[in-house]
Length: 102
Image 1: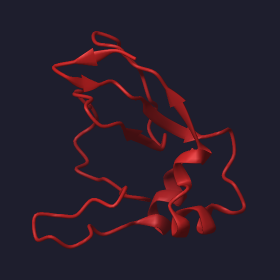
Image 2: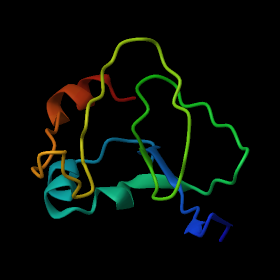
Image 3: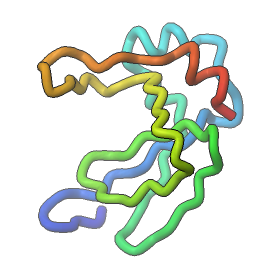
Image 4: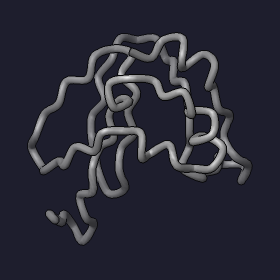
């Protein structure tokens, strides 16, 4: 595994494995949603194009530039246990995200 500044490059999780699974609700509830995503190993200097609507998650230790149209819209389907600045879990937008996910 590649390391940069002492942090491992784990992966980027991209879209569902070619389908939206029937048990998505269960996977979101029990935290196993990552198992439904394709893991892509990344290295410094690489470039990946993710089309609009591609569900994606950035692994720990990855620094990236996410370039998009100026919509200022992010739909969070799962948040890996993260909390906001207020210490509370951030809002999820499961219904909205599934409407626009390819």
